Structures are given as structure tokens and as C-alpha cells.
Image 1: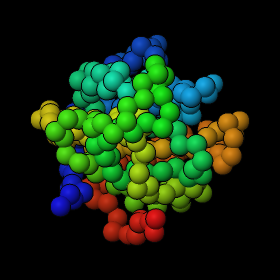
Image 2: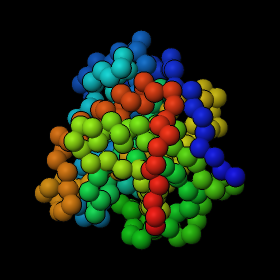
Image 3: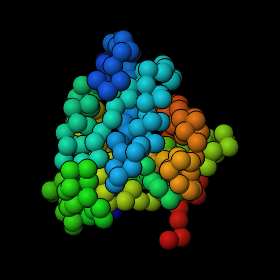
Image 4: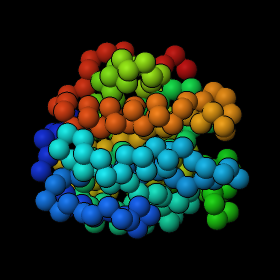
Length: 242
């Protein structure tokens, strides 16, 4: 039976250097870092709030950790190569991958990544894999090691809608989420890295339901702080009826 892992969260990892996409901030090599990724726009959109939220946090210090933002392409294979390079370069204490979930009204803490690609639309280079594994021979699923229920509680206390989500979909978001968790499980140097995936709603200019960018940034900042501080998640209901 697949069980959510117990994860140690006291960290000492990570030399940090800023990605080229947000160059101009001097690196602080002696401080552990948090890696926050977002995606580029996809499916004809002009923007992607997941990247705008990540970028807004780049260079900030949260819980003694420097935040490094990086943009991933909404492309199945290439996103994995770029994420692997980021993990190797930064050796982060914490990784939050962000994605856009149009149609959702709340910050969504994803519980589980599944080993399947089943794209309803094509990615940004026209790839549309169907019923293929993310990692051949990999486990059926991985659980987030974020304290997802504690984060939901803390974000909600700020007056920002948040929820536990039982699915990250079967598009590039889940593809990246699964690959990240698989890489962390396989690499001894990253054994103590906490990681997970968070979906954000549309921005108001994209449609409804939506959330202002400032609220997304506040929510992600609180999620980082909570993940760095907590050694265990809350024992509270976060399930779904369907």
C-alpha cells in the first residue's frame, strides 16, 4: 500500500545561484535555498500566473532561506531536463513547483503525483502523449512531502482560499510533479529535500474564477514558511467526496 512519507524537514542544503531568466540578483552561496518554479504560458494564453507568482518571490529571504525562481517550459520532455538541471545546480532544501489551474478558485495543495501522461491538449511544441508512463518502471504514484493540510490552514487564515487537491491532472503539471518526486527519491544528496506541487487559479484578466496575483504571492510565501518550519503535517480532514 502506498503511504505518504514521513519527511525530516531540518535542512542544511544548498548553494544558490540565480537562474538566467531572473539574472541580476547577486548569488548568496553560503545560504540554503528554496527553489520555486512556474510555467510559461500555454494553450494560446498570454501569461501564466504560476510564473508571475514565482518571479515575485525571487531573491526574497524566507525562514533564513533564499528564494530562487525558475521558469519551466510547458513541454513534456524539456521540462524534465530543465528541472533536473535546477535540482543539481541548487540542491534546494525545499522545492515548490507551481502551475496554473484554470477553473479552480483556490490555492490547491496537490496531494499525489501519478505515473501517467494523458494530455487532453498538446504542449507548447505539439506533443500530446496518451496513456504513457512518466517514468518507465517507476512507482504508480508519489505523495507530496509538503505539510499540505497545515499550509491550507495557514493560507486560509490569511483570508485566501486554499484547499487540498487530490489530482494534479495528467498534463505537464503532473509530469513535472511526478518527475521531481522520483528524482528526489533516487538521489541521496537530495534525500532531505521537501517538495510538492501547488496549483494557482487564473488571474482576473484571464477569466473567472480568479485570484489577484498579490494573494497568490502571499499564499506561496506562507506555504514556504510553513514547509520550512513544520516537522509534521496536521491530522485534519482534507479529503474529497468525488
